[in-house]
Structures are given as structure tokens and as C-alpha cells.
Image (cartoon, rainbow, N blue to C red):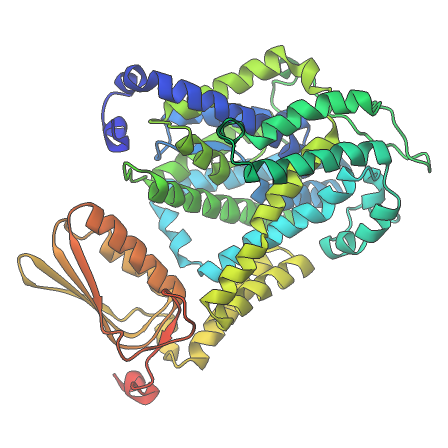
Length: 555
């Protein structure tokens, strides 16, 4: 049964037809989600159980509101940096207070997501240049590693804070501290963390069919519990200086924590209001961007070529985040890694997300005492692995192959983010990209206005002509046109009168070609014969040296 049929038909008919597929996938995904949800919550400054609560809400409640069939809703590593920053800054070093105040941020940002989904604003995600988005994700990965590597080695959490202010050290400070942590590690904790790292990095290389079916995170989790016993890890361990190590996860029954946890005190305090607004923007912007990007990625991977309603999905995530934040949970997104696993497990419908939530609920109701036996080093190892995948050397190589200008945009975003914060980082990437456009000959006016026109010379042909420049800033307008084209036609895209066609625009255009031709239409992109590619990559930016800037400006 195709994803489209599952989306349009009776949801209970879908349950009957796909029960075995979705039940199995939901179970397998829950095994991945449990340790990651615990780890993400801990790294974010939230009680570990709240990460699982978020995933439970994302599965059991939100599965039926979602605009995508196969995405898994839950907390994401990509938001750790923002959430932890909110807890730290709003709580002024007091994690308990910061948690409650960050929940107020979460509620407001979630309501903005509901409104954005309602008004079909998910298309704004098309605005951001690809290199800057990849730079943002890579910087998040580096920041995650910068903190979690110390906990993996058995360094007391108090050592990762400024001795005078009590606030967490900045990412660059944490990176500089790695040699010190290696020299002062706690052997028993580090042994557990390193063994889990070996499992996480090593198992994907094993070709055995059996091992390929078992999530490495699950094997690391199962292995970590007896390792903690062997190495005598205990909740009250201290380092040589007498500082608390906190080597074990601590959770209680979820029933003991149900209730309203949110506080809006930061929004009503004039001295805290600027920070409150800043984190509302970051929660909303990054969470929404990751949700839409993940849903798009899963659509591309879906063998049945299902097409998500991104605005509906964003609205559903907003509803889930509102409920989650009120009850004490993290912000959720359509999470790409768990969604990819869901697809790979053979899931057919949204019921897989629902079952993943049900299994998580069973775990925290019946097995929370077992969860308390999980070493923190194991969760840190999982997050280091996640951070590595976000900032993989392959990402740097890929961006280099796209062209030197794309690599500079990517690298600038990383450096500025590590030195400041995510909003400044992504803004820096966008500004550098715009500067490159001007240097490469794009008319200044093209940064603000798209030169796209549409005509139909006959009943079976649509001609789309782009003049002046085809840039990432035009993707929103261009997609508004492309997504409303009648299917099954012959579409001709003319780019011959452009001075510059950038990578993000070309990538977006080729995604449209795939989608449109999957629905029976034909698309031809012409007019690039005289453009010079800025790298050897098929989707590299291109400049037409035969078109003068003066002519474009006059026209």
C-alpha cells in the first residue's frame, strides 16, 4: 500500500492493513529513541525523563495531526545547544529554575509554530542557503561533542562551568579543555564511554545481516548496564578533588512528574525579556527549519514517493510542543535519524510513530528502575556519535566539492556560531552568501526581487523564464509558482538570461524536477550552456560571463 493511499484513506483501515509493518517498526524505533531521548534531555539541562515524555507525546498524541506519514516526532540533538543555552541563561546557573523558565519559551515558540503552519508559512524554510544550513548543523554537532566528550571521560559536571559565574563554559573553551580532561579522566567512567563509542562507530562497519538489523545505540545501551556494574559505577561517586561525578542516569516514575511545569516569569521580567525573546526566535526558527527539512528528506527517501504537507506537519509539531512544554518536556521536531530508521524498517503509515510512543510509555512505566542503571557515559557516547555525524569530515569534503564559495559560507557559519550563537551564525552565513552573489555579478536589485515569468504557449507546455539571477532568496517565490503547476505537462525552465545561478537554487530546481516527473510530467532546464561552473560538482553555482551587469541593471 502506498503512503499516499495511507494518507488519504481511513486511518483505521490503514491500521488493519499495515499493523505488522508499523508495529514492528514502532518497536525498533522506540529502542533507538529511548537512550537518545534520555541523553538529549540530560544534555539540554532537562530531567532525563522529560526527553522520553516528549517522544511519547510526539508519538501517541501528534501522530494523528501530522502532515507526514513516516516521520517520527521527538526531541532532537540539533536543539540541544539552544535549549541548554536557555536553561543556563534564564536560570542564571540554576538548572531547576532554568528548566521551568525555558518551558515558557517553548510554549510561546510552539504557538508561533501552530500559527506558521496555519498560515502555510513552512515555505520560509526554502529561503535559507544550503551551505549555511549545513554549517549550522555542523556547528551544533561540534558544540554537542565539546561538552559530551568531558562527561564521557568522567569529568565532574561542575568542572564544565565558570568558577565565578556558575554558567557553562563556551564551546571554544570546552574544546580547549579536552587535553586537560584526557589527562584527568576517571578510568571506570571513561572505560564505559569508550567501549560504547567503539560499539557505535564499529557496528555500522560490520557486514553481518544480524548486526545490521540491531540498532547500535540499543547494543551500546544494553552493554553499558553490565559494564557499569563491572566497573562499580555508583550514583554517589566523586573524583579525586571530591567533586560529584553523577555517573548514573536518575529518573523516577513518569506518574510522579505529570503536571504543569511551565513558568512564564522570564516573559514578565524586564531584565530577562530580551533573552526570552531571543530564545523564542531560536526555538521557533531552528525547530521549524529542522522539521521541514526532515520531512522533505523523508519524502525523497520514501519508495512510494509520498508527499508531506509541510505546513500541516509544522502545525502538528507546534501542537505537540505546546503540550510538551506545559508538562515539562523538550521541544520536538520531525527527527531525521529516527524517521530514516522508521522508513528502513518498512513502516507504511503514521501508526509506526504512534506505536513508537506506546512502547516508550511502557518502558518508563515498567522499566524506570532499569533505566536508572544506565551510565551517563553511555548516553554521552551516543551524543558524541550524533554530533560526529552532524559535523562529519564528509560534510566538509562535500562542501569543498560544491565550490570554494560554498565552503567559505559553510565554514563562516560554523566559526561565527561557535564564537557567538546560532542566530548570529546563520545570519553570517546568509550575509557571506549575498556578498558572493554581488561579487559574482548578480544585480543588486536581484537580491530583493525575482525575475521569473510564466507563460503557456500551448495547452501542454509551460515555459518558466528566469532573468537577471537565480538565487537562494528566490526559492520561496519560485516554489510558490512550481508547486502550483498543473501536473502532467511539459515544463521548460529557461535560465539563459541569468548572470548567476547559485547552488541552492539549482538544488531546489532539481528536487522539483524529481517530484514533477514522478507525477508524470516532463521538465527540461535549458540555457546553461554559456554559464561557467564554479566547481566540478553537477549542482555547482554558475556564472555567465557573456552577460554584462550593466545590461541587467538597465533591463
